[in-house]
Image 1: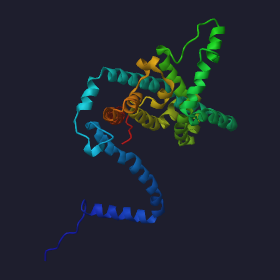
Image 2 (image 1 turned 45 degrees about the vertical axis):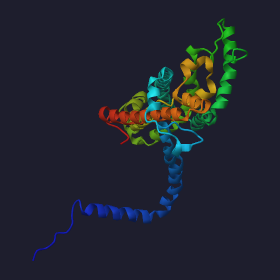
Image 3 (image 1 turned 90 degrees about the horizontal axis):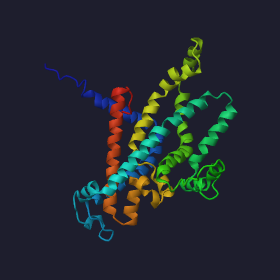
Image 4 (image 1 turned 180 degrees about the vertical axis):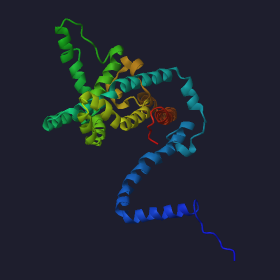
Length: 318
């Protein structure tokens, strides 16, 4: 009698895996239930608005709506590529983002390592609280604070410069100074907050590695170089890849509240350009095309950065 072989291997595995998945869901149903609000928020506010991207391919009219507005294909993207103003905006965005990447990305790592080396816990907590607090201040307040500090008339910084015999500097009006000002103000506001991720990564390193290094005679610098930095390398790579994805964002909110027409030629970035064109000129289709361009480039940068890190550093997000 001929027997029918039982399903094994690739045919049986999916059913077993599926069964295990449902067992896990039934076991921890309450935890999965807690995911529903977050998933609903993600779907409603992140994925549903993507439908609006179609207006980048239309001559959109708020009176006709998306369904009645005429389709124009790649018209707005061709206009985008041919625009001299957009070339200037794109170059400003890349330059400001590179400044922030080069000068600000290492700072949270350095600060986290220095904080980790502090031995007095009370002092460590006080320093952490002080450098974290600026993150919770809005850019409007930060802008007002620095305007008062750097003002030509009565600003503390320019007062000191005058007393030292120098010429006062128009920090917010000088195109040669405005970009460094953006880097400094973002560093003051965000570096402390960025250290949280790296401190958490350092806390996960096995303390026995440090003890073994001490026995071998390694000083603190060697312990940092051979244990701490390799221990947080994967976190550094993760944060770098995510930062690359935001290269074309360049701090839109910050620049909106700090720049002025005098420094448009060095400070107008894609985000501010979209804001002015979309809301100021009511050119919704063109501004959506610019925003879509920014998102696509950001996606390409994330994928490329992940590939590069995986190939040359042996670490990646996926």
